[in-house]
Image (tube, rainbow, N blue to C red; front, top):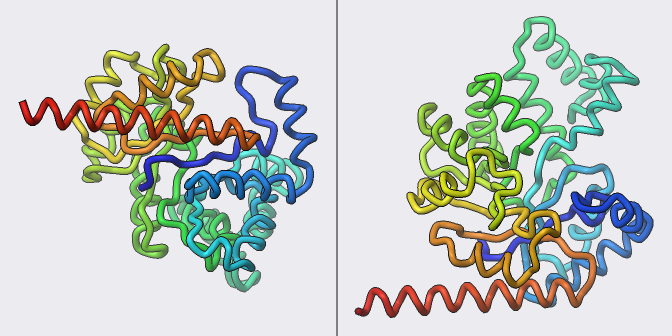
Length: 296
């Protein structure tokens, strides 16, 4: 994975610190051109991986990326499921109606397959169908890592339903030849659980910041686990929803040996540039210090 990944929260009105900012961002990014302009700014700064939800509007962004040579080296990391989409569909259409609407392929055969799986309570098979439905919009696009959202990861962890996590892992590996990724708010528990299920050195994205925001288990435990290097780790929510100044936040996370990549979102060229420069600077400084220590 690249050192810096670009996220999509700002495009869909997700702001953990301010509802007012969230509304303003929703209005600003009503048009796809506005989203593409920000992605172009990220590319100009040398960021070539977009970690995005499977929001309906991402389908049109995928169409634009597929249709232009400009984005031939641009990678997307889908994060699924987009829970609101399914919640609304279940409310309006029911469970079987939702399967009928979202599963890809021949509608009659897939509906029969999905309906049969539902009747037999074969939820692992249903999970595969839903993964395929989410991935349909990304056909023809480079998706080296495919993620399961923390709302699902952590729910399954809490319920002890590890088999679904294993199903996701195997299906992504076997059908899409991609790296399965797990987003979580409980890094220590997730790693223990995956290792017990036979999944070693997984790819994980977790909240990592200086004040312990959304870090279940606490900072000390996280730092211990990170130092063990038991996973390929992406740090998200580094700014702790705006509670930390960017310089302080990036300096802390870049100093953690064991964090492979850093995910952030921004809505302006200047903020993208400043964040990228700080990450590069602190990462380079950390490597310099490491080389000096090894030399001594």
